[in-house]
Image (cartoon, rainbow, N blue to C red; front, top):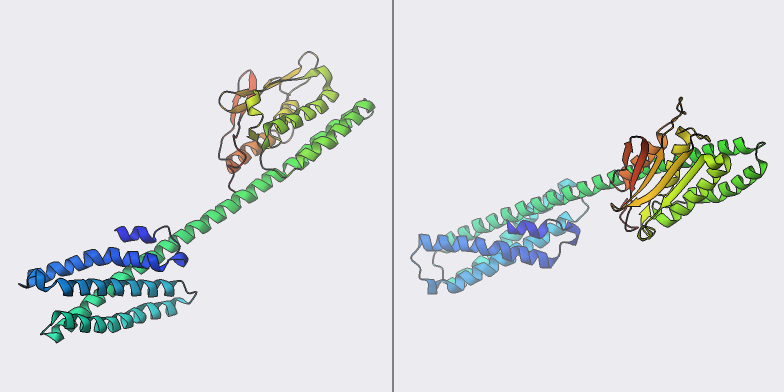
Length: 351
């Protein structure tokens, strides 16, 4: 039914008189056509004799529909209790229809020179009660549609809030995780390489400023600068046992990535693999034509995995899935490879 499209997708609080008039016209045309067919079927009245009465009846029905719609939608917009809504919608529309039915019946009888006034009054009253029923049904449909829409909006609000909370929990796990591992590295330098420890601490302070930023996504160029600073920290501890290569297409430098993504993968590689002169850890960070950035490293896994192995990567995977609805691709052959999607714009996140 076409009139449903006039109320669906619109808030009842913004329902205007213009929409009420449009509804009244849409419904009155088929409604009056049915009445007119009934008149022709049950009588031998010539068309020229009913032109004025038909116009009068049509205008009267349009006006009645319009007034009832305005009244009903005014009532449903009130923040009343359900019983009060029901009272006004039921008795109010009946009272309005009775008053207008009498008024328009009198006008119609005058223009049409009706001889059987009593029958006509009864016919018009029944017809107007049908109008009331139609208006009430449409009002009910509109209210139900609005409630469904409100419920959907509320559900989406709760879903978004849940995602936000889960994301913040995941993000909050990064800071202590990063601090713990960095302090362990610093502890290994103190006493063995005091100058290196000093330089490491300087790098650590600048790196940590990046870690505690509150951004949800950041330009790849900034994430690469941060990762290079972090790699310098690793280099101070492991020397030539740690190597990292970069192959970045310049067009992707202005694209976006989640902060601490690349650093986390570098940290994981160092954490889970042996680093020695004979088996150096070699990482490569490169962009791909698929609008992703790939981090690869050779595998020389430690015999005993460290506590919490896999937590950081699972965290990163969950953050991408929650916030951006994209998946990180992980493959493991003779090398370990993680491919992260890049974002072309900074505003695809709606939570």
